[in-house]
Amino acid sequence: MKNQEELLVALSDCVLNMEDETVGEVAQEYIDNGYPALDGIVNGLVVGMQGAAELYEQEEYFIPELLICSDAMYNGLEVLRPHLDKCESQKKKKIVIGVVEGDTHDIGKNLVRIMLEAAGYEMYDLGRDVVLQRFIDKTKEIDADIIAMSTLMSTTMPAMGKVIEMLEAEGIRDRVKVIIGGAPISLAFAQKIGADGYSASAVEAVKLVDRLLATETSKFEA
Amino acid sequence: MRMYNSKERLLAAAKQQPVDRPPCICPGGMMNMMFQEIMEQSNCSWPQAHLDAKKMAGLAFALNQAGGFENYGVPFCMTVEAEAMGAEVNMGNLLCEPHVVESPLESSARIDLIKPLDINSGRAKVVIDAIKILKAKNTEVPIIGNLTGPVSTAGILVDMSVLMKEFRKKPPQAERLMEYMVDNLIAFGRAQIEAGADAICISEPSGTGEILGPQRFRDYTLRYVNAIMDELDVPVKIVHICGSLNSVYHILPEFHCNVFSFDSLVSIADIKEALPDQAIMGNINTHALGTASASKITQLAWSCRRKGIDIIAPACGLPTTTPLANIQAMVEAAQVMV
Image 1 (cartoon, rainbow over the protein chains, first blue to last red):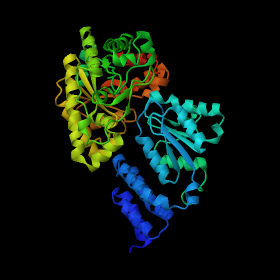
Image 2 (cartoon, rainbow over the protein chains, first blue to last red):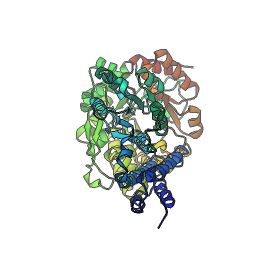
Image 3 (cartoon, each protein chain N blue to C red):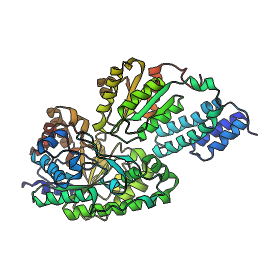
């Protein structure tokens, strides 16, 4: 029987080495041995995903690799999550994310979702070509802490400003932080439309959200 | 040096022959050249101009006539090919370009679900007919036909995230899909050339070095773009790759094109060093074209000229809110003889 440390390394390696088909068995073995699910996520799967993000930043990995690593992380999470204590899974900060209406380019948005999920945030992914009202409705429904919007096309950039105007009209602008990203987006544009933050990459997006919420209690470690 | 007309100038510049001054063009296709002001002036507006050959040709003609780019270019989006092969497209509106609603294939394994691209029906025919209308005007303005790149087209038919994973995990299966893309894109490209296109531009917004990394960029983007270019008999072949090129500079000389077009974040000095034997085209920031003053655009165009660009062009697709005055400023800066 493997000890917990060995299994944590195995979980991390499954994610880092893109073993999306074997990670489920390792996660099951980990649970069967009676080790805590939270540890398996934080010190196993998430460590592997962070390693993958580092390799991506060093241009050892590219987006295809990162996507398969994230599949492995999600496959592992699927096994471990049902074993989390209830209180552990309810403390997380909530983020609504989507690609704005008129645009279907969602690779960047998916990477941001993956990195934020790995960092312990609870993600509500509205997908792509998202009708703007859905950002508002979902935010109200789940009492979201952050709205994250993305677009790759300059023709759909103005939609981001519209969402902020809609939040103001609803009187809930001060209850939620708005962050934006995508190839044509800049910090200057974010400031112009009154967003709370801009990030140029998925890895930076985690730092941005951490900073905006300025609390570690949102993490799995909570 | 003698005066060139627009077509002669583009053909010469593409071959890196001496010219009186650089041409100023925008290919169309993924590299959108259209905006609200010219649509309203010409009474050829989106989305109708995506669907009606007369309006498509009319809009392309009007932009050149108004002191815009020194070429005609069609179509005005990157969804014609995918739609012809079975993707459902939302035609957008005056300001928003057409986009695919849903990728019809779950995986590259499902080639059986794709329709062959029929050049005699749908919007493929609209594009061909628009080229014929422009050709019949018998002007000295070059006509640029466009193809959405094979990786980007496959990445519309199959969700790009799924396709990228299959590039890595199931290469033979992904390659069969890519070969299907190549055959159909060759047919569409040849039909555009036969209708009168003087140039073909293949744009790869998804099949980039930045997204795929150098290995997959070579194995998929380079391989299949070349497979198409090799089958097209046309004097000007343009390849546009979006995004950063840092990881793939060494691969770029292997593209079978005579013009290479690139993003605004790429330095002209770096690209000239990487591509001594190809004409280089670009790379005026499209956000600036959309929002900056005309005098700022004049400066940007001159900066490109001073750095030795062979063909002045926007670095990507234009925002539909771009003022005509900015495009005129860009063209005028190219027209000054030095």
